[in-house]
Every structure is written in structure tokens, then in C-alpha cells.
Picture 1: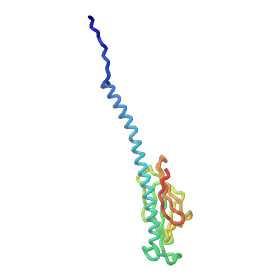
Picture 2 (picture 1 turned 180 degrees about the vertical axis):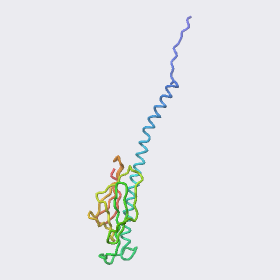
Picture 3 (picture 1 turned 90 degrees about the horizontal axis):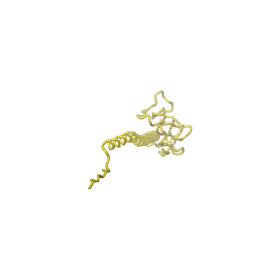
Picture 4 (picture 1 turned 60 degrees about the horizontal axis):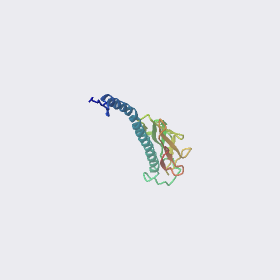
Length: 176
């Protein structure tokens, strides 16, 4: 009887095929993973900047109310007194803003402090660059209210910091 030879069928992968797949997966991971990381960091940074601006606006409003004629209580007896301090927050550029005060007349250097962003991916803009509060905590700027827009440079995430016109309340609103 003749020996019948059976053809061997290989059901596994060779080492070369396996290494090729591992290299391809590594290359794809190196390209895709940083994009997800940027999205998460950018979203958090936009929120953090918007939160800081809202905090500074609230602090500005609190200073204005606290500088009433009777000190930190903010009680107002004569609303026309020229001795009270006015506090405001000004958007200086797309990456910084300042908190300031003055006594009726704007001095050359009015800044209490200036805040500058560390990340250029976050942009700050406002149609109303100055937000000024009186001793009642209501906005006194010409627009008397308005909002500050905070977004990332790719326009994926956006928060608005709004100042309510009649009350001066500062609200943080997620737009996208």
C-alpha cells in the first residue's frame, strides 16, 4: 500500500504576522489616544477658566457691595455720596482680565490684580469688556449686564459667564 500523504493545514499565525499586527495597532494608538486626551483636557480647562471669571465677577460684586458707606456691611444711606469705591472687571485680551477699583476717578493704575491664562487653547471674549458694579451689586456699565464667552480654540466647548442686568447675579451657562 502506498503511503498517503496528507497535506498539513496550518491554523495559527506566524510570528511575522503577529508582529505586523502589533506594530499596526501601536501606530494607530499613538495617533488616536492624544486626540482623546486633548478633548478631555480642553473641556476641563474651558470650564476652569469660565469658573475663575465667574468667581472674579462675584468677588468684584461682593467688593462693591462691601464698600458701602458703613464699611463691609454694604448699608447705603446716601446713594449719591462720591466717596464710595467702584469695582469692576475688565477683559484685557483673549487671554487675560483684571479686577480693579477706583474712588470716583479712574487712576492710571487701577488694577487690584490681573489674571493671565496659562493655556493658549482657551479664548476669552466679551462684547462688554467692562463689568462695573455699584454699592447695591447691580451692574452700572452702559450695557448693564452682558456675558463673557469662554471657548477652546477649536470651538468645541463653550461656557458663557452672564451678568444679570437688574440684579448683578453672575451665572455660568454651558453653551456647548
